Each structure stands twice: as C-alpha cells, then as structure tokens.
Amino acid sequence: MVAVDDGTPIVQIGDLEGVSMQILVCVLPTLLLGILSLCFVCFLRSSLLKCKTGKAIDQPKLDYLALKIKTGAIAFLKEEYKYLAVYVSAWTVILIVLFTVERIVETDYTDGVRCASCFLVGAILSAAAGWFGMSVATDGNVRTAVACASGSLNDGLRVAFCAGSAMGFGVVGLASFGVTVMVVLMSIDRTHGNAVQYLHSFGFGASSIALFARVAGGIYTKAADVGADLVGKVEAGIDEDDPHNPAVIADNVGDNVGDVAGMGADLFESYVGSILAAATLATHGAHPSLARLAFPFWLAAAGSLGSFVGYFFVSTKEKGDGINVNLGALMWALERGTYVANFLFLVLSAVIVILLFGPDSVAGWKMYGCVVIGLATGMIIGKGTEYFTSFDYGPTISIKDRARTGPATVIIQGMGVGMVSTLPPTIILAVAIVACSALAGEYGVALAAVGMLSTLAISLSTDAYGPIADNAGGLAEMAHLGPDVRAKTDSLDALGNTTAAIGKGFAVGSAVLTALSLLAAFKDEVTKKKMVHFEVSDPILLSGVLIGSMLPYLFSALTMLSVGKAAAEMIEEVRRQFREVKNKHGVTLMEAIKKASEGKVLTEE
Image 1 (cartoon, rainbow, N blue to C red):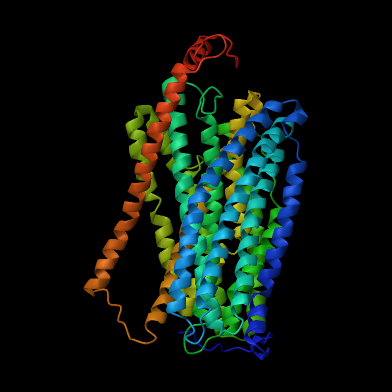
Image 2 (tube, rainbow, N blue to C red; image 1 turned 45 degrees about the horizontal axis):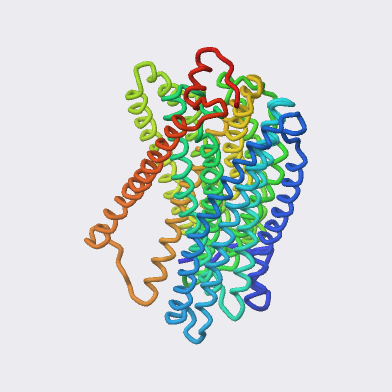
C-alpha cells in the first residue's frame, strides 16, 4: 500500500486538470531528456564518422576487414529478427484477443488494441536499440584501431568511448522517449493506474526481444570464440586474431551481436522495467500518489542529465603497454565520468524530492535514501565485479598462476573464483532490499532499482566500449599493424573485458530489484478481489520456489549445450578449411602456417 505523503510539495501536480495533463507533467522531464539524448546520439555519431579510417593512414585493408565484420553482424541480426518478427506478430494477436475478452476497463473494448500496441512498440524499440548499437560498434572498431595507430592511447580510448556512448545514450533515449509517449497516449480516457497498467505490455515486448537477442547473440559469440580459439590457437598455434584463421571474422562478429546488440536490448528492458515497477506501485493501494508516480520518471531524467556531463570527463594519460598496463589507472579514466554523473544525479535527486514532496517531508527523504542505496549498491557491485575480473587483483592472477600446472587446474580455479564472486553482490543486494523496505516499503525497493540504473547512459557507454576495443585489436592484428599499435589495443581490450563484466553485474542487480517490485505489484493486483495468503510453508508456494530455483540451471544447461553444438560444427568447418583451402600456388592454409612457424615469410597469397 502506498502511504499518504507527509510534506508540502512545491510542485502540485494534482492541481492540474485531466489525467492526461497530470501524466504529461509526471513524464515530461524524461521525455525531454529522451529527445535530448537522441539528439546527442546524432552528434556523437557524426563525430565518430569524422574520425579517420584505414584509408587515411594508407591501410585500406583495415576498412576491408571492418566491412566484413559489419556485413556479418548485419546478416546475423537480419536472420534473428526474421524469427522475432513471427514471435512478436503472434503475441500481438494473442494480446488483442486476450484483453478484448478480459478487459482492464470493463466498459471499453479497446484494451486489446492498447495492450498490443504497447507490446509492439516496446519490442520494436528494443530491437532498434540492439541494431543501432551494433551499427555504431562496427563503425567505431576500425576508427579506434586507426586512432591507436596514428595517435596515443587516449585517442583510441576517446574514439571507442564515443562509439560506446552513442549506444548508451541511444538506448536511454529510445527507452525514455518510447515509454513516456506511450504512457501519455494510454492515459486518454483512463485513470493513472490504467495508463501504467497498459505499459506492462511495453515491458513485455522489450523483455521478449532482450531474451532472444541476449541468448541468440550469446550462443553465436561463444561458439565462434571457442571455434576460433581451439583450432587456431591450440591446434594450429597461431595468434587469436590471425587473418589465416577462417573463424576470425565470425569471432569478431560475435562481439557485436552478443555483447553489443544483446546487451543493448537487455539493459533497455531493465531500464524500462525499473521505471514501470516504481510507477506501478505508486498507482496501487488506497492512496495513489501523483508525486510518487512522477518520482521515478524525474529521477531517470536527472540520471540522463548527469550522464551528459560525465561523458566529457573521460580521458587518460596512460601509455599502451598491453598486459603490463596499469589497469586500475586506465579504469579510473572511465570511472571518473561515472562518478561525476552519479554525484550530479544525487544532487538533482535531492532537488526533485524538495519539488515533489517538500523539504519537510520525512517520507520524501526516506525515498531519497532508497535512491542513494540503489546507486551505491550498483557501484559496489561494479567494484566487486572489477575485483574478480581485472588482472590487477588476486582472483584473476590466481587463475593465471594455475596455468603452470595445466589446463585442468585453470578450469578448477576459474570455476571456483567464479562461484565465490557471487557472494558479495548477493549480500549487498540482500542488505539493500532490507534497508529500502524498512525505509519506504516495496516502493522503496523499486526506487533502488531506478537509482541503480539512473546513470545507465554512461554506464552502458563503458560497457559497449569493451567489444569495440576488442574488435579494434583484432583488426590491428589482421592488418599486420605494428606491435606498438597492438599494445595500445590490448590495453583497451583488457579494460573492455572488465567493463563488460561490470555491465553484466548492473543488469543482474537491477533485475533482482525490479523483479521484486513487480512481484509486489502482482501480489497487490491478485489480492484486490480475493485475499491470498503467501506463506512460505504453503506446499504450492514452496513447490513453485523449488521449480523456480531449478529453472536457471536448466536454462543455462540448454544454452551451454547449444554453444557446444554450434562450436563443434564451427571447429569441423575450420579444420576443413585448413586442410582443403589452397592459394594460387596450391598451398593449403595449414601448410602456409607451418612455413611461417619455420621462419619463412607468410604472405596472403
């Protein structure tokens, strides 16, 4: 139940006439910042395209290879989206029929169309976020490699981060614009609660795309990675991105369709879900609050504004020394922008509390505490993830040291470290949930999720930066650029591996908080007409908990089996090409590699 707010707000949204006008004021800051984010994306993309390509430094092969990666990524997403189109179309029809029969508003027959339209828009925007991220990443990889070849490590970092930022702000812009426009449209001839309830279909559409994009892209990228590494590095003894490895392009394509397009769609859904969960709880209960409905939307706008400022604080003076680079110092280059964004967000959030709830509102400042807890939780999870994945720290170093005794001990140590790494975020999330629930109940937990994802624009920018830097390193090696260039790209790539892991930590942490909030809203909804007791000792509830706890293992097993099957086929194909593909002199790929290992010049012919 949402309690009555106890302060004297400066902004009196309830004094406005009409539900649509009140809803518009609630979402207006997010709508404006969403539009501004999309405009900023246009600026970033324009700046990125002005950066030098391979042709400018007399390395046209870089452009040729980058085009191969881009066309491969486009081909994969086109095929994936064909199946998704069928899935989305089927669910659109189902929703129209379902909510026309079981209406939200009993006297109106347009509920089916409303829910289906929200679902369709959510799915389209989520898919668009993934596609746009892939497009920007494949434009940024070659420009990052060129920046490292013709400039400093900072030049390469700025180009890669510019490309990553185009995706980060693009995802936030599309999400902010889409969810605000749809909630305003759904408020016509409806109550505040009805308008938000229709938007659950928007979240469902975004989740559907996120699931397919994440899983399909992940299976592809890991299968290509395994195929390229096992046959190339282990059997043939060549470098990871050697151009003579037939799987090298597929490996680089996988970074874009899995770690970029998949993550974009995933965090699009998480961002939308956190806002909708808080908005849902604000409109439930005996005392729905317009201030509480506006709060998550205004917080999202504050986070976007902070991210704008934080973007301009990203730079580094480190030199590119490959694996010997000070990863902590390089990480600070990206973290500086995030810290600036978070600080501005907290300041703006305090102003929002005063505007919506009043400076004398105890409940308002308790909710502010939940936002701070959520933001701090995200940052702590990020640092914990960095500790377990960065080679500056003990866990990763311990895995490396186990390589002295063979691959079996590496696997054992790696799995052990990975399992231990789940402990800190679990404890942190548990503490955050209990603390926020004590401060502001279920709504407080929802606000923690909003706080965690508030500065998603810059957080996702650092995440998307990783695959771009990885691709840049691959292009540098495939084009036979100098070792100094490869050292710079390796430094950026090492940092990118850590930022990608941090992004996954944010996604998981926010998903836990959002899921709890939506579960609370679901409980409120089903107990409106009939009291339902949720007892842990209830056999039905306990059975559901057991089955639910098993599902992640089943889902993980199915994806791992899919990766294994696809990787096996990839390995056989690479082996076949090593044996059978010959150049104009009749020399096979494997024979050419053996000649190179003997010290002979290895040419492309």
